[in-house]
Length: 333
Image (cartoon, rainbow, N blue to C red):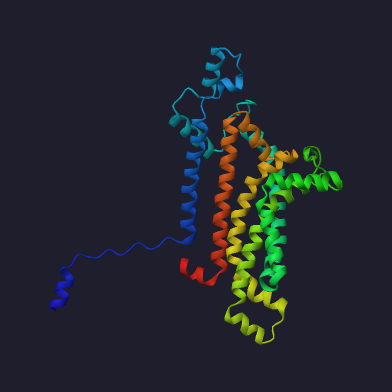
């Protein structure tokens, strides 16, 4: 009775709110991150100064400069311009290009398809080459062959992408004449007509990622191969291909899947170098040209698009890892 009275006199303890489902938390993270990206992108283009004089030229009159500023709302405070731009983005309006005086989407959309194909091709090359080599190296290679593979990956990783691209262009494009060095044919033909124009840029972009994925896959495969259940499988007489594909690969893959998700977004950043080097008419080349000509609306739209893909790819990779790994799947529910 006394205990009941004491309990009745106690203030009620509020229960902790139920945890939000994993996907809801990820979506909230996505929205917050994208909002932060818009602030950074717009802030960087705003602090670069007024582009009116640079775009109109040194012989433009003050009246022409003033008219340009009023047309593009550059005479308004930065905060006002940011919220106007953000409101337009939320309604699907990316603004007006300073150079073409047309909608930004009309400038970007012709470049979008070739760049998406190029990035997907580079990503497939990365997966097809690096995962089998890393798995084979982690399970089978020891001694000099393992050291040789490690040395080669370190050498390739040490070269910047533009140096790798130049080496490929000289070797495969000039000396052997197997592939075109100039990729402008992408603008004039269909995907299959200009397929060879994709090869050198795709290999250049993929080579920036392949060494890292090989080393990551190799390290994870080697760690899993030393586990007790793997050694027990060996004692049971499980064949080596079955051991690698059924026991080692599924358990070594989750960190690699996360890395591949992040590298997918990294490949999008890598297209700037490869497309500029080979004259590939894609988003990377357009981004470089727009930055050089101070076409801020185009730069903002493309940077936002690349940032959004990076964040979405990162979260998608995390979600895949969580839902294919039983231990993680149980902890995030």
